[in-house]
Amino acid sequence: MQRKKQMAVKVCLIVMLTLGMAVPAMAADKVLMMATTTSTDNTGLLDYLAPHFTKATGIELKWTSVGTGKALKMGENCDVDVLLVHAPPAEKAYVEKGFGINRREIMYNDFVIIGPDSDPAGIKGKKVVDALVAVRARRAVFASRGDNSGTHKKELSLWKAAGAAVPEKEAWYVQTGQGMLATINIAAERSGYTMTDRGTYIKYADTMNGNPLLEVLVEQDEILLNQYSVLAINPQRCKNAKFDLATAFSDWLAGAEAQGLIRDFTLIGKPLFVPNAK
Image (cartoon, rainbow, N blue to C red; front, side, top):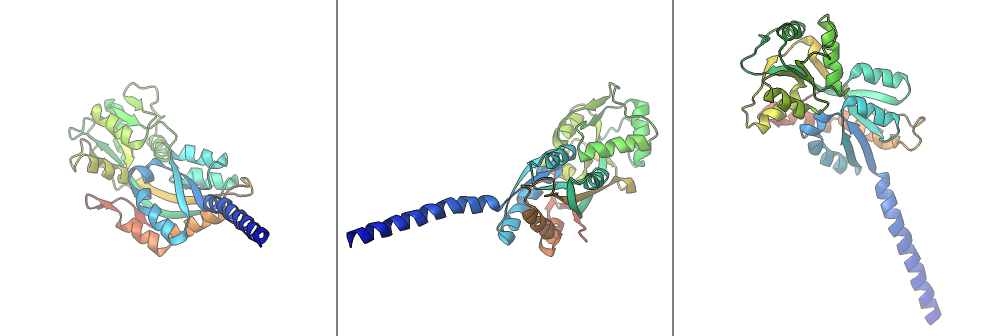
């Protein structure tokens, strides 16, 4: 009898140890790793969305916030499972190369050029191309992220559209190599201009209690559209990529709940992003 009890205890211990090992493994399987642009993180959007996603799916979302160029590279290196970025030409090329699949547009806002109230280059109200021509002509300070982010990629394309090379060697053109909020602060310190997505600008204005040092001077130009998309990492290139979890995240972002949450996400009474999943 005593022997049977001892065997029963051993069996129970084995079962408990097995379950104890299985639970962490199962928990790890339900963690989705994402690389994303700084704007989705700096604005607080992801902190706002993540708990809702976990509640709806049981999947924990973890992310690294970097420029879009670095985010794409992280996916290429198989360091993450999914991307949320905003550089459509680079994203489409990425998919064509087989690194990402199932690109899906989720939301947008727009880029704006901001600067001091004194507006030394006189760009307020101009089209963006004319504004950059004026900045160059007046040699006014312009702070660029210079980090291969989605915003930096867009800025480079706008200098090209303005009909001239990027002024990389000009003293008035400051390449910060930093994120958007840091770049805005550098532009403000030097009473200069910079280009930012509207969502991050609203976050900046919120941190300044609604009285930012820089104001929006150039906006609502069709060329300034800023589209955000989600891409799953191709499991054929990255065998450990959690494609099922990435697909669940993509489906959830495009669904009614997340699209409504994105629409309702505001700071100082202003929406930061516009949902547009199809």
